[in-house]
Length: 123
Image 1 (spheres, rainbow, N blue to C red):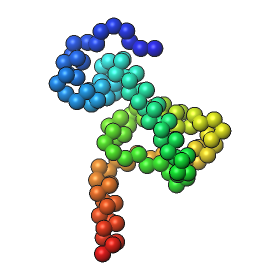
Image 2: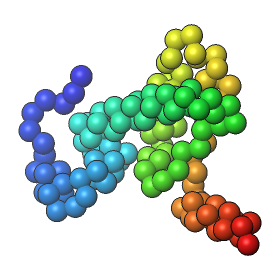
Image 3: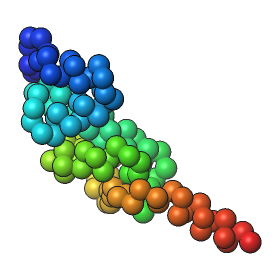
Image 4: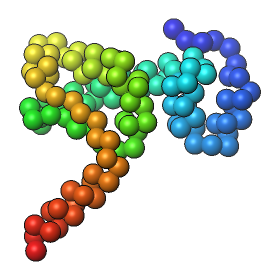
């Protein structure tokens, strides 16, 4: 399902003058446009599916930690369940995936802190 018809003028203007991805996410989370919400829901499902693929490839039984700038910004939609449903939708591998904790890293400097820790340990 989707919202047929032309995009509203305000959305077209914002997307032409701002970062389109940010506008879509913001519009989706605020409920301003159903097309943006559906686009973000699809993204979240793909994000969950690919996270599960990587968890299985690396047998990440200690957990999947999602970092970067996107996940914290769309956390409300991640919490609605589409991500986890897609993550677990792996047939006979579901029981393995159910044992893997999923965490979103909220600390924006986590990568730098980790790199600094490793650098200090090498001294």
